[in-house]
Each structure stands twice: as C-alpha cells, then as structure tokens.
Length: 103
Image (cartoon, rainbow, N blue to C red; front, side, top):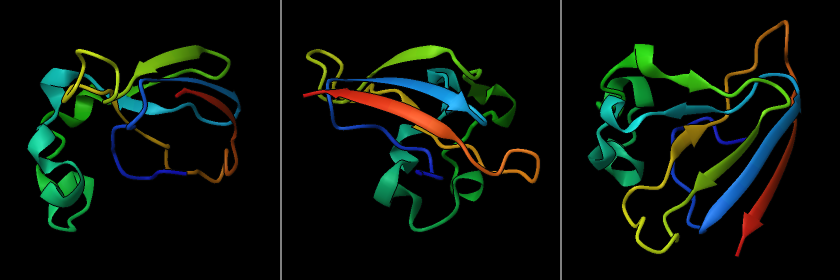
C-alpha cells in the first residue's frame, strides 16, 4: 500500500482492483510535481502543496484495468502518472489488487 501520491520508476504498470477501492490518481493540472517525494519536506500530501486542486483527485472503479505510464517510459521522463492507494474505510477496509510491471 502506498498512501502518499507518487510516481513509479518503471516504464508502465498495469493495475486492476478486484475488491475494495480503486487506485487514486491526479491529472497533471491538479498537482505540483516539485512537491513529490523529498520535495514535500515530510509534510502530508494535503499540506505540502502537492495537490493543487483536491476536487480533481480521480478514482479508478473496481474491475477497471488501468495502464499507467511510469517515469521510465521513453519520452515520458518527469511525467509519470501520479497516484496512490486510497485510505481504507470502515465499509471497505481491504482491497484485492493486481499489478503487473513492465521492466
């Protein structure tokens, strides 16, 4: 589980949630990439300035298959999809997730 927004250092990742809440992701206009990772200075995503527009957080529905370009996709350096695992809720405390990485 990756509770903070991040990018993957792989060319691509296929992801599908078979139970529970799907992966959350941010469109490019809704984030400040400079605040990813160490740029956040240890602050939570909501406080670091990473999320420019909190209403823009998107969620993949269960059973949807996503193909996410990562940082290592040729020509996509610096533009990997920014995503995170959703916060578990009392209604959906667990998830069943399948990921396949292109290496």
